[in-house]
Image 1 (cartoon, rainbow, N blue to C red):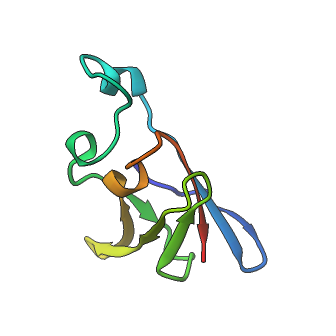
Image 2: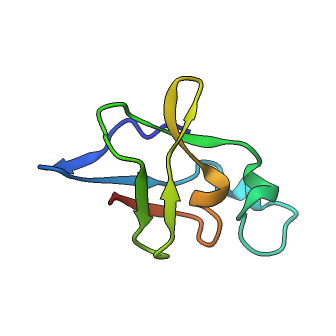
Length: 92
């Protein structure tokens, strides 16, 4: 999953993360497809033009830390979707 079209206004940046094929992920599961058991080591890539290391999920209030994956910034999907199946992430 890659976030390649961030929304910007000056220094403010937001990313929207929405999983594709959510019904496939939810198949044969009780509840929503959340956390590490679903997302394993998958991550969303953060475009290099977005500086900073910390993002806040507007929906849940959770703070997420960017890490390096194969030379690019990334956020673990197990963290992004740990409590809610979509995310609106703002750079803080």
